[in-house]
Image (cartoon, rainbow, N blue to C red; front, side):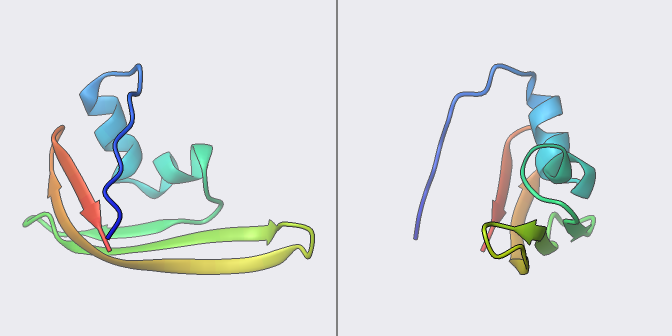
Length: 77
């Protein structure tokens, strides 16, 4: 398991919105990420990159969203 923390100079609501929307991920890290998050804070995240790297590969990864608590926690596996 990897537990990572970092300091981001932005409001908690902006960081949470970025991590819990495909648009947020795609603005800084991925190309076509999709999240399905239910009212219980669980769901699925699919991370996608197009034409990535030297070989211009299309890559997809993702997994289960374990917990999403507004402005406090976003955990996926």
